Figure 1 (spheres, one colour):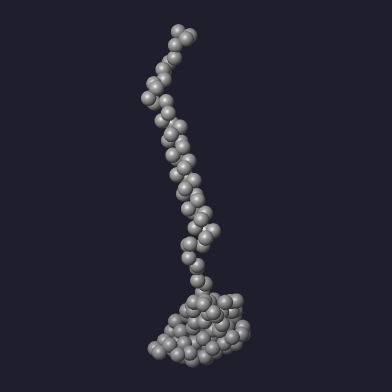
Figure 2 (figure 1 turned 180 degrees about the vertical axis):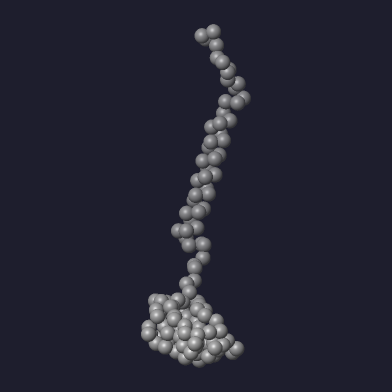
Length: 122
């Protein structure tokens, strides 16, 4: 009783666990290398930023006061919603613009920054 094994080893099952372990470690290493390589080589694409500005809109008299302008923003404008023409624009904080009630207020980006609509049909 002292010299017998409770579960005798079968020679055919002996190397299964180490082989599966090696395969899993190689797979995890390949996946990690792909994820890290994507970030290091910037293959995920660049995220384009949007212009940003803070405005206070008074609907009673259709005035727009610029309260903040982001660093990537060229100016804030009242744009005619029918033809897209700029009616008025402001480049500094504290400027008040009178817009029509169908204008859209947008922050216009500088460089390759995308424009951002702040309000529609004010």
